[in-house]
Image (cartoon, rainbow, N blue to C red):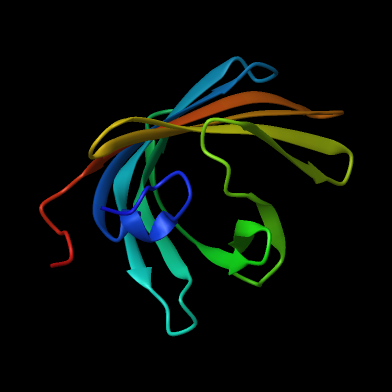
Length: 143
């Protein structure tokens, strides 16, 4: 089996996720539940597509996003849908993404087969939040 810490193609298939965003400035906790699908791209990269529902102040809001995991000479990189680099794929190590005057520090951790998490801590002049996403494999796995 492929080692997911070095090759994210091991993630191919369906996942369920729950996400908690704790906004310290707004003193608010936001929940998100949904699904993620990891599919192989023609170029050998991986498409990471999420769909779900965010609950904020009792209101349910549909959400979606697409990221990509791209192979590079120095390893894998997570990119935004528009192709901009987000951060290196380095499970088990802290990564950083500067965004204007804000800084995002993230950590991907695998808890065992079929379970992993992504944590982000965002700081900046107008933000201070933590976001934790827990993913669990579903039966939608490639053969």
